[in-house]
Amino acid sequence: MAAGARSLRPTMQPPAQDKPANTGHDGAVAPPPGVRMPQQPSPCDMPIKQACILGNGPASMPANIPAATLHKPPHHASNIQAQNAPHHIPHTPPSDPPARAWPRWLARSFDVWWHTGLVALLLGYTLCRTSPGFLRWLETPFGWKVFGLLCIPVGMLLDAAVATLAGNTPGKAMLGLRVTLADGRAPRLGELAGRNMGVWCAGFGFGLPAVSLVTMARQGLRLRRGEPASYDGDYFLVRAGPVARWRKAGFGACFAVLFLVVVVLDAVDRQDSREMADVLTAPPYAWTNPATGRMADIPPQWRYETFFDDDGSVLHVFTEHTEHAVLLLASEAHGDATIAQYTRALTERLAGQFALPGGQADDFRGKPSWVVTGEENHGAARVRLRVVEVRGQAWRMLALQSPPAAYTDEVVRELDELLWDTVTAR
Image (cartoon, rainbow, N blue to C red; front, side, top):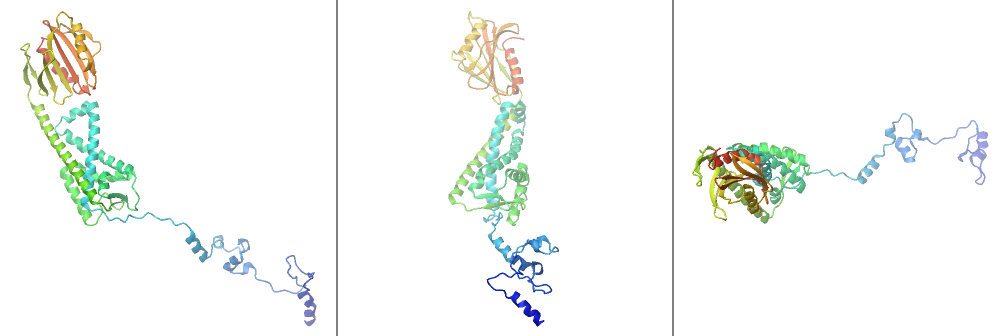
């Protein structure tokens, strides 16, 4: 053993300037045959954490270690990455306190009044000019009331559209209220429309006075108990921000004016309903043609008035109770002019009011007649002029019908026949 050790000494301590002959490609000393040199532990023999620190990759790891474990960073490294990564800040509910019951009711009433009024004005104007059936329906005792109730849900949809486009409604904005989702986000149009339909049903009771008192009282009690309104649930929040006194005063003035308008319109509607009922139930009244002495029974929906033309001739004017139609009866001597010539001269006199081009001859109850149709110069009324020669007099009937003319066609035709009966026999 001593000889063996001495024989190994030159190899174990080579000169510094010369490379030993028994060295490997990486510079390590190769042991002589039969002698085992102590070896450094391989990465496979090290703990996983130590191998990762030494920089050895997964290829040097044992095959029985999962890949997910090999790529898992040290615990302290994951903490550093979590600190440096960008944070996602979730939506949080607003910090303003919940709105109280009375401010909510005032803002909601204000918004519903003007939204529903705007819908009723635009929709009513359009239907009154295009739908004869709608006008006849309004003549029923509760026509206007039912129409107003049907406009409320449409006004609630308009309310949702205004809140989506403008960010809030006028009533809520003046009182510092705003509707948000539970996570603080602004609701979308569909969400607001669904909530407003809930307000219409569970809050306003479909607009029925007796029902709405119960539903609004129920929602108010829920709010006083700290519970959300049934149409809000856990999905919507109504918050109240700080409001300056001048904004509260401005809202109070606007609310009072709008409330007064609602009261006046309701009073006018009640008066119109009473007058409509009186007209529809009244009997016909007798009218006598002063020029011929003949009498006719005039339907009660026609109001009779007398006027005088520029030349002093009497004008008998009959106006339909909704003012959608007017019939004018008058007569004057036509001299040596024919009925056609007289009619053309008359249309020229009326050219400032009506456009009555052309015309055609017609036999009316065995008498010579001329008929002209046209329209108003500055309106949409339909105009029809008939001139008939009776015993040397030119009798004329001028009928004006506002759109939709079909609404008054039947009553105009009936009155036209009755008035001509006072001039000439059928």
